Amino acid sequence: MRVAILGPLSVTDQDLGVAVGAAGLRVLLIRLALEPGRPMPADSPARTVWPDGGPADRVHASQALVSRLRRVLPDGRLRSAPGGYVLDVPCEAVEALSFERPARDPRPGPAEGRRHHRSALLREALEPWRGDALADAAGLPFADAAAVRLEELRLAATEDRVAADLAAGTEPAGLVAELRGLAA
Image (cartoon, rainbow, N blue to C red):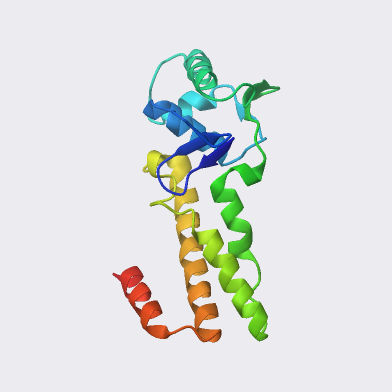
């Protein structure tokens, strides 16, 4: 299973789309995807979906949300664990987490081959972006800081890629147009 959150939520399993329809389920899956493999406390699903209120019985509401999400996801991907619930996917299966590694790699030295390689790595890392990070959870407390961090990393990776392209001799006219678009 792959979870894409660099834009609107998109989930695939064996190259087939998985429909996660309800907004609350989408928000819960995004929250779980930010920390795959780590338990989310039993009452957190309700607090995630309704940060300013919601049902009085948060544990029961959380159980209902998790039950509904389990029916949507492939078997075994959302499981109970001591202390709560776990999204059972590797970090590489979450698009935002797999983006961070190449975007954070140190900048290459002056060797031309490494500049081309760095540009290609960054181009590949930036490719999955389809809009605002965590778009389906915009404005929710858990998502705001993560979205800002991802957007800043996206901008830094774009700047690094443009610098690597320039250093490798890429025609600057196209890069200038791209930078103008970003500045606007």
